[in-house]
Amino acid sequence: MRSLILTTSTRYLLPLMLLFSIFILLRGHHHPGGGFIGGLVASTAFALYGFAFGITAARKVLRVDPMMLIGGGLLMVAISGIMAPLLLHQPFMTSIWGHTVYPAIGKFGTPLLFDTGVFVAVIGVTLLIILTVAEEDGEPEKA
Image (cartoon, rainbow, N blue to C red; front, side, top):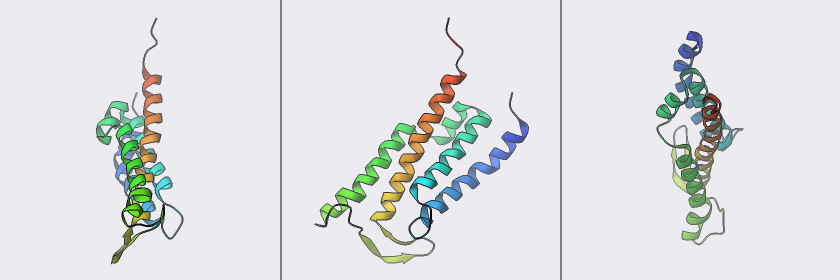
């Protein structure tokens, strides 16, 4: 049985929570927050949607397999920590910053790419766990 209050509030909370998670991600360079906390907030939004509308609906809204998110996030982390400094003949995990300052974001650099990779990987890992457990819990027992 679906709750009218939960389904109605989830329709409004999903975009707000995703926007807030991006705010936390971008704020994390100079203040508390960052990729890990932002990823947890974003995955909580999708988990709430799954509880309200069902796991298959949550997977449709997500549009990407959580395993792909994990791989993409780890690839971004590897590029920011290993490949970018190596190409510029810098030590491992060296921060490389751009020169242009963008409003509300600041300068682009490898730390932002690293945080974004952590953000994407955390979303993938937590949703893989939550959606898998929820799907197994909802299946009828086999005789």
